[in-house]
Structures are given as structure tokens and as C-alpha cells.
Length: 382
Picture 1: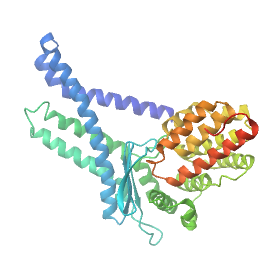
Picture 2 (picture 1 turned 180 degrees about the vertical axis):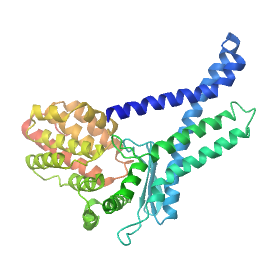
Picture 3 (picture 1 turned 60 degrees about the vertical axis):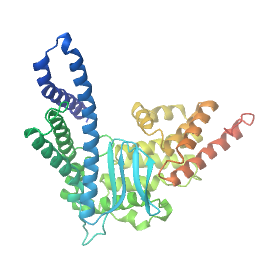
Picture 4 (picture 1 turned 90 degrees about the vertical axis):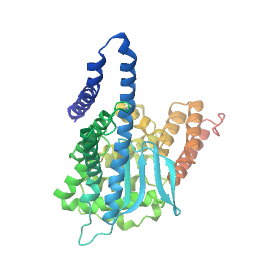
């Protein structure tokens, strides 16, 4: 898996270098590298860099709207769409913007999946819609480049070539059946559902649960039957359902019992996605911090991979509550714990899932109570 990720990065770098070389060639040929051509060359490089980021942003937007459009055409209902750190979702009858970043994804689209009929539902066009729209835009840009549209304006029509290459790259990568560190590509999900019919109920249930959470439905109000809509036990979708149900455990459970359950889940649930596994480990660190605080266990849990994940997810309540408990009870760093709690308050108004904020506050309060019992002379009300 590491070699595959390394190859993907090298391929991407060579792809972009080759693309810039193709586009920059006319300027190098016309101006060379003389002192008189230095400013135009620098300006061209800067504009190419800006054009690349603009083309990447537009490709992501087109990709996610592709899922949205083909989803609506096949009976899905809009739930949420995200670009970078910006999340737009429908709640209380209107579209609202929140700050939220899904790890491993530059953008995402969540929709309410149609009801199943005869054990199936439409998914092929919905999953491939992003790649189809990227491919279509790539063809349009190649057409614009071939016919010289925009000639004489900055580095047009070559900018169309850049947009075409970026969209083509995103279309190819997203439709390939690749399992990434945190999320599977659209192609991987499509391949799984086409090849393994018994996974479709699990996928359907995952989409139902996800859409309900984006609508603001509390976990306890989600229909319990959705957690049982599965014909398989080993797919990433069934594993995700188990993980979501497990992560929603009440905050009153005994630390030792929860730690044992998490260990069992991590050892038996081999199909867990990287994201679900990391969130379970995060929960495990929290309960170890308020419980036995075994140094060996914590060292085993807090790996570099887990640290990197928690940095990416630093504004997610479950990560914040874990960092807080660890700083307060393990490191005994009251000042750092105070800063972490302030981060939770800062994101509270813009975070899309208020139930997660409430749970995090309860678990932080639980850590405070333990700290007060153990160190009554230390101010735990930070």
C-alpha cells in the first residue's frame, strides 16, 4: 500500500511538471532565458501556478456537482456538498454554510438515497457522475484550445489545456478502483457494488445514516433498522455502520469496559476504513486517559499515523475531547488543556453537527471532574 501511494505521488508530480513544460514551451521558445525575458518568464510561471490552483478548484467543484446532478436525476435528494473546508447543507428549509473538512477528500457530496426496490437502488450514475462531468469539461477545454479560443489574452488558449489536463486527471483517478488511506475512490465503490451485490444494503444504509446526520438528526433518532440493513459482515460499509454505532456510545460507560470493547472491535473488524479505525483509536485514547492511563498502552495507541490523523481532524469534537483529556489527566498540563477547550468553543457555532459538540462538552466535563477529584487544589474550571 505504501509503494502504491508513493507511485501515485511521483506520477502526479511528473504529470504536473510535464504539463507545465508543455504550456511554458512557447514562452521559452519566444523569449529564451535572457535578462529581458526574465520578468515575462516569472510572470508566466506565477500565472501558471494561479491557473493550476484555479483549474484544480474548478475541477473539484465540477466533480461534486456531477454527483449532485446525476444523483438528482436518479431519484436522490440533496443533503450536503462540501469543497475544501466549506460545507453547504440543507437544514430547517434553507441552505446553510458550515466549516467542515472531510479527511482524505478535497470535496464531497452527500445525498439521501432512494428507497430500495427488490433489494437494489440506482447507484451507478450517482457514483460515476463526478468523473463523467470532469471528462466532459476536459473535452470542452480541449475543443477550446484546438480552436484557439481566447488567443491574445494572457496565456490563453493554453490555459484551456491546463484545465483539460487537470479535469482529465481527476476523472481518471476517481473512476479507478483505488482504496486510499481514509476514503475509497468513486470507482472503488462502484466496482464493489457491481461485483458484490451483498454489499448494496450496507452502502444504502451508510448513505441513509450519513444524510440523516447532515440533516441534523440526532443519533438516537435515526431509525434503528438502518443499522441492520446489511447482507454482509466484512465490507467497509458494514464496518462503518458498526463503527458509527459504537462511536455513539453513552458517555457514562466505565472506561475499562469501553477500552475492552474498542480493542475487540479493532481486532475483529478488519474491514474498517482508515478514518473509522482512527476515530475508534481516538476514542480509545480518551477512555485510557480518564481510566488506567497505562504508559505502554498510550504509546502503542499514539502512533505517528494517529498523530497525523488527529492534526488533520483537529477541529472535530471527538478529537478535541481526546486531546483535552490527555493533556489534563496524562500530561497534567492545565494551560494546554485550557487552550484545547477554547478551540472547542471557537468551532461550536460553525460546526455542522451540534450533537457531537454536546457530547464532547459532556466528556470534557467528565475529565474535569476526575481532575478535581485527583487534584482538588488545581482549578479544573478552565
